[in-house]
Length: 208
Image (cartoon, rainbow, N blue to C red; front, side):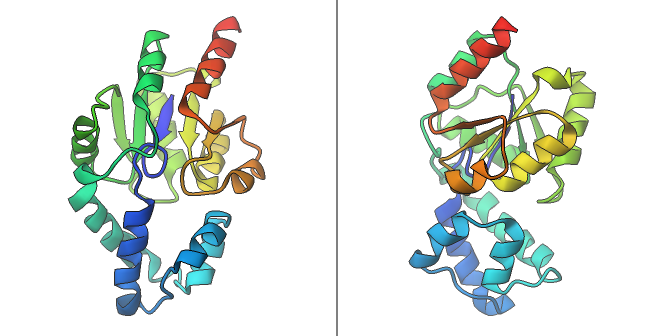
């Protein structure tokens, strides 16, 4: 199982909102108010950019600054949900588990260690926010995985899109960035509300 990091593992939403608001004057886009959050969680990436008034030309510079700030504070963040029982269950059932992230690997490991989540077997960094499919393909090639038993676990519409583009199973989690309704519209293979629901998926795979 390959996990997305932001939102799926680490609770970065509030931090990113705060950083975005700090950058709004510099880059000339709309601040995110409390009443905007639920609306934006139900939108696709391009709709979010349009709502905030962030041009596609400014986006790389905004992302670079947001990532720099997140990486400097990542070790102090909390997990999105209680993941440890689920991670131990995956390991017990012989799963190899890894992370694909746009964050710096060293800082992700600091977060995991600080939160007693040192359970992951491999880490890959996606250089582009919208390039996770290429990174996932590289993982599958490097690790010599059979696509039919690879699962990508993410909390955003773009995570489902990336998994489908590669041709692997997709598991959407409702506790992250996008709402459950927004994720459901993308028809992931599985849509879960709690980490331990992954046990049913594991048992299903074992039976096959």
